[in-house]
Image (tube, rainbow, N blue to C red; front, side, top):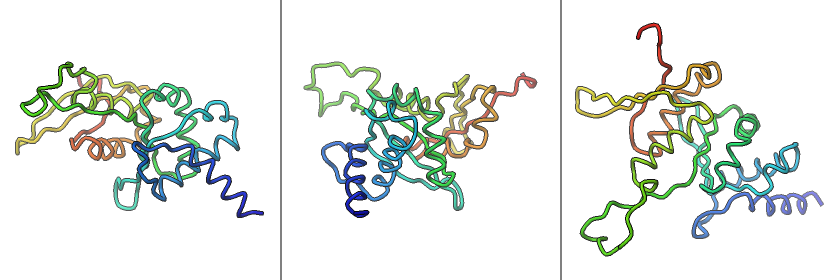
Amino acid sequence: SCSTLRSVSMFTAKKKIVKEGDAPVDAFEEQVAQAIFDLQVQTDMKADLQDLFITSAKEVEVSAGRKAVIIHVPFRLLKSFHAIQQKLLRELEKKFSGKHVCIIAQRRILPREGRKNRTQKQNRPFSRTLTSVHESTLEDLVHPTEIVGKRTRVRVDGSKILKVFLDPKDKTNVEHKLDTFSTVYKKLTGRDAVFEFPVHAAE
């Protein structure tokens, strides 16, 4: 019956999301997992997607009435997602009625050594520092566009804003996503960033 087929499909789609510590999967995450599973079954992406899964998904508001989707994936699978990212995002954005979709690797920040955790003998690898995780998040966010420059500006009130310059050759592809990048970066790191393209004529 139709409902049995649907529940089988849902059960299989659940394999597309594996949360840390068996945390519960919410309704939106189920929707994203189902969308990825549908692409695996209904398109020529089957071989690319069958071993891939995500770890979480959430919606964020970018501007009045416009939302974006943040999908976290296991760090070890990031390269495989990147290999098909442009096609995957195009298909997912169709399924989520034009909302921008961002794929970010799940990374863990290790706390800096302090009095409380000095007993840990191992040195904290740079890839687990706050700075490194934030930089990698930035790269994931704009992938496959390259970051060609970064500057930190200090506002009058003392707060900092990061200016991120993107490769101008991708301008037509990503210009409409610059607000999304700023919103998602702020949501993930708590930091302000603006994304733009360098103006060579002015230099």
